Length: 561
Image (cartoon, rainbow, N blue to C red; front, side, top):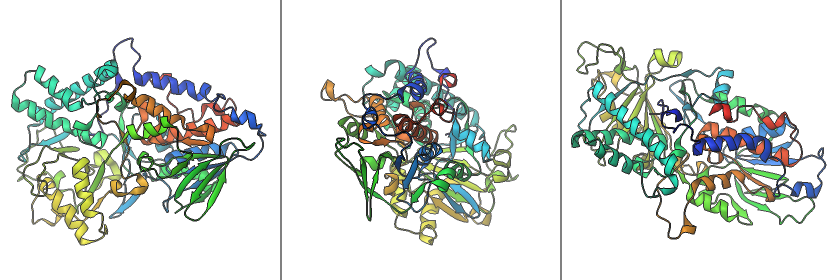
């Protein structure tokens, strides 16, 4: 349930600086001081490049990180070439048509309001934002609705334990086994509360909703690195229109002034040994070989895991280890739209009884371990978000249900639809057959009523998209115990290695997987990472003046903590 925000203030120990806060402080300082030439960056001093000599930078990937990086570089007079494997810009920020509604296939939410540049861009471009009501309906494993007061009470317990887990992970990360999961922590805490077995089971089932945050089953969530799941403080906004105007704003300068090659997949990146006076980086595609002064690799983490592109010489062991140690999620979304939002019309003959104080159906619906659908023999949890409320979504309200799926459930559904055209009857039937047992539980559903029959369906399929790295975004999963102390995984160091890149070879990395800890796995993180790398390149070449060092003034800083 992405509308829920989890502020650090709810679990932070007074007077203690958390891992996340320290990283924010480091990143804020880094934007000023770490761009000073370091021993690694001093190759630029050695080659004595004229400040006014034309610098040519390649950005591999036209997603948010790449576009923001290009924006910063072009603004400071750098020649930029963008190589994009898709036939469009935006990467995982992409929209498609659903019966005259343009819907996001990538992120729907803006996570956190404090010092968030995406929120500022959304307001600047007049994207429609809304705060989804923090209301929910829960169906148990038999398809019976759970009393709303009871479910609200149990969700409070869930979020209380999540806060405890954040605190424990932050305070004792180094002593927590990498094999211990968030589910293990919940099981222990619920046992200590001495609740009935029935209530413990129900709360554990409700806690599985965490999977929709991380894009994988919650028993895969690392407790040791749970603190990395913290996000920016403030509310979470749903983008009721779509991210299209935000994307165009970020891309405007690149579209006007960069050389952009679409449908151009980079096969390899080759850097010389640095002995030349003006070292170059070679980029090989299927049809061409390009030569650049610097290259910014913004492909998704999943692509790096698949060694796409390859690097010669191989990347440093610190980066290789980081790519291996980090994990990649499998979140998918399914839109199902109807002629009308039948669930919002509370007819007098409805068997679904709402408390008098509830004027409309809940924004969020959870289906816990359903045992009533032959299409779901594994009883995967499901979550849906209704997009129909005019009070919430305004003029962008639509009679549409948005399901979030992940893990084995997402793998199952995408495996069925991958070979099919989204416009085919078979595609429609597969999706409708799977989700009908759930939307049929909503108020006023009548099988023969035309208003209760979907008009269109649309699903994402990121985990079968090689250009997305066959996944969605970075997350932090449990791992095996190290065989030796030297083999211990330290994700915070791995992420810093990705963030640093390989500047002495002219190779830089950007993307949501290289962001400040507080924005990992988010669009904000991708934007920040692209901006940061752009500024570092400028500084390395002596081109960033005092005002430029501040970037967009939307980077995380001490005031945003």
